[in-house]
Amino acid sequence: MNETFHLAGEGSTHRRIIEAALQEFTERGYKGASTRAIAERAGVNEVTLFRHFGSKLDLLRIAVEYEVSQMHVPESLEPYLEMDFRAGFTAFLREFLMQLTCQSDILMLGFAESYSHPQIVYSLRQMFWRIRISLQDFFNEMQKRGRMRKADNHVLSQMVIATLHTTPLIKKHAPSEWADQLTDERLIAALVETIASAYGISNSTP
Amino acid sequence: MNETFHLAGEGSTHRRIIEAALQEFTERGYKGASTRAIAERAGVNEVTLFRHFGSKLDLLRIAVEYEVSQMHVPESLEPYLEMDFRAGFTAFLREFLMQLTCQSDILMLGFAESYSHPQIVYSLRQMFWRIRISLQDFFNEMQKRGRMRKADNHVLSQMVIATLHTTPLIKKHAPSEWADQLTDERLIAALVETIASAYGISNSTP
DNA sequence: GTATAATGCAAGTACATGCTTGCGCATGTG
DNA sequence: CACATGCGCAAGCATGTACTTGCATTATAC
Image (cartoon, rainbow over all chains, first blue to last red; front, side, top):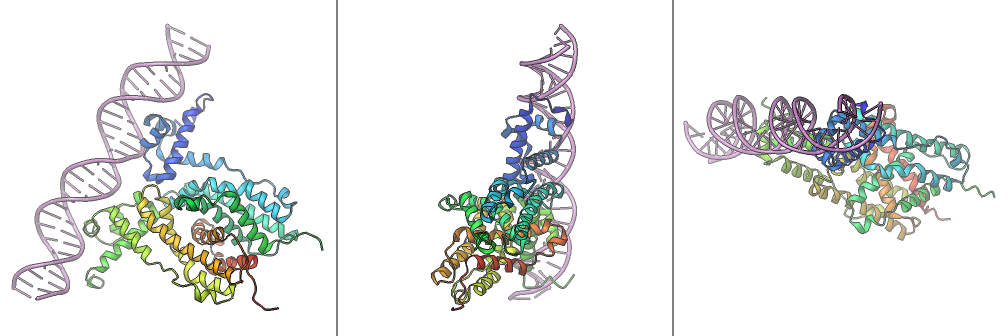
């Protein structure tokens, strides 16, 4: 009784459950989240949850897939490569990588449940991977075009991603006077400044 | 079955349980880890676990405290500040920050359980914080001494820590041909290279 | 030798929770 | 109208698991 619920009219319940589930799962972990709590949070009866998704595990799967589907990755790097290194990098960060700061919760869940639910992690890994590869490609291309010095692109891209992914988690536990200072723009600025200073080649022709 | 039993009175059992608990907790989360599994992993009877620690929650508390106590932070930055920027930074990374790569599992647990067990997270946060502040101080001091250009030290230190903390987690999910390339030394090298290139001031007197 | 402390073992209690069943109530559509 | 669909409600089943109790066993201390 899975696929029979796609009446255009009542996607509302379906979606509300998924979103409630994502919140509960990310807050309490898979085991910690009870179907009762999810249903209550979604404002539906517990039975409705099972009628829609069959089991708690399937709910997790579908919720994760839903979240992953929300993400978009660059189809072409060309627009960013045509710019100056600083500008291109900044645009790229803003456009794609900042998603990591929004979805850090579910990526976190993926890490936490990696042992118990390897299948779930696979989807999240894909998301993580593709965006990482894009970044690495961006560096590779910039180097080919002479706008960036040679670097350890593998680790470099990981640095950037790790920073964007971890910062929101840290902010949660930080005293608020610190957390408030850590705006997205400041993050981006620092990343761009660091990497551009280290490896950027200014194209101001001498 | 006569070798390890009469070692040091009772410390052996106590420690074995703590270590088993840390493994189970980090692998499955607090809820996911059962006292039975912990006891079995430690090679003791489940009752023994309760006789030692009273409750599962207290076991978690004590285990986390134990892990935190294992960490050491720099008392003085002086030795590192006397060196060249690259050398000092490298030494600092090796000496203190690499601990994050070993303890990423439990830090991870802290993030994952942050909602359910805020008291636990507090200990871990302390650990995270103190080492972060040290790094930031290191940057501050290096700048005072004219070996480093001005930078957003707050974000910069966070970048470094995030990278060291996230990389081992990523390695777990990476295809092995990637994971194997990501050695600790390569990580350190890339971090030093990046930050030194960006902000380091070579003291080779012109 | 005997007391004491640490552990194993078997059994059981209480409770949370995933999941099911059976019912009735709306709403809209042919 | 008749019928289907989506949902709420009440109750319950089955299972895992934190935690307890009582007793037997071993090892070390004195």
